[in-house]
Amino acid sequence: MNKPFLTLLAFCFGAAITYVDSRPNWDDAGISALAILATCGVLSFLSPSRWWIWTIAVGLWIPIIGIARTQNFASILALVLK
Image (cartoon, rainbow, N blue to C red):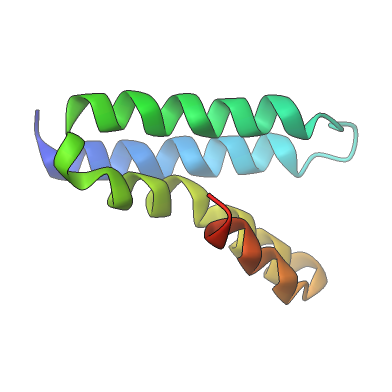
């Protein structure tokens, strides 16, 4: 499959998951984590040699939003723990 398309898809899914997770009435981190796991799993199945790119592309949004909204630099640990 086209790798630039998959990268764009990973960024879009990561942004969508982070958007839903950042809503005030959303309080279910388990579903967000499962969505990230499923997205990275499907993308890694489609292109296994680039698994690390999918993890970064999907998970990068979490620290970006955490830093932008609350100056919470500890959210960078979310990338390390993936």
